[in-house]
Length: 179
Ligand SMILES: CC(C)(COP(=O)(O)OP(=O)(O)OC[C@H]1O[C@@H](n2cnc3c(N)ncnc32)[C@H](O)[C@@H]1OP(=O)(O)O)[C@@H](O)C(=O)NCCC(=O)NCCS
Image (cartoon, rainbow, N blue to C red):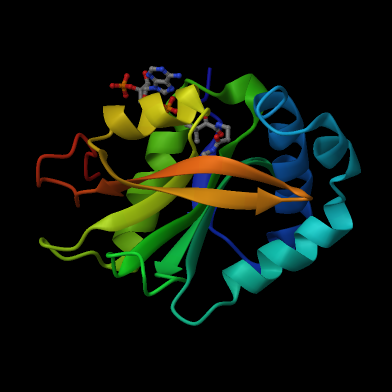
C-alpha cells in the first residue's frame, strides 16, 4: 500500500507542502485535544514560515516522505532548542498524512533522520508530545522511547500539558531498525 512512497532529504522548497501537511494533520489528529478555534485559525502560510525556520536551524536535518511530487510525511530534528532539556538532540517535528498513518512511514522517516543526524551509540534523541496525544505516545513507546519529563505547551491563549520521551539510537534497546 505504501510501495510508491519514497523517503528523501527535505529541501527548503518543500516548506509550503510540509506546512499544508502539518495543518491537515493537526486538524485531524489534534481535534478534541487542542481548541477548535486554534486549529481552525492555523494558516499554511504562517506554518510554512515556521517550518522553514526549523529546517534552516544550524545543524537541523529534515526528511520528507513523497509519492511522486506529493509530500506525505515530514521529519525534522537537530540540536536541542532548550538547554533545560537534558538531551543534546531533539526531534522537532514528525508528521504523516492522516490517510497513511499506521503503515510504517513514521518509522521510516525517523530511521532516516537518525542516520542524517549521525547519532552515535550513546546519544539520545528527545521529543515533546502533547500529554493527551495517545497515538503518538504509543508510537514513541513502540519505537523504544522512554518517558522523561512533563511540561507545558502554549498554543494560542491556552496551555496544554506535554510529556517528553527520549529515544535510544538504533541498536541500543530501541526497535528502530537500520536499513
Ligand atoms: C505519530 C506518527 C508520526 C506515527 O507515524 P506512523 O506512520 O503512523 O507510525 P508507523 O506506522 O511507522 O508505526 C511504527 C510502529 O508504531 C506502532 N504504532 C503507531 N501508532 C500506534 C498507535 N496509535 N498505537 C499503537 N501502536 C502504534 C505501529 O504499530 C508500528 O509498530 P511496528 O513497526 O512494530 O509494527 C503519525 O501517526 C502522525 O503523524 N500522527 C499525527 C501527528 C503527531 O502526533 N505527530 C507527533 C508529534 S510529537
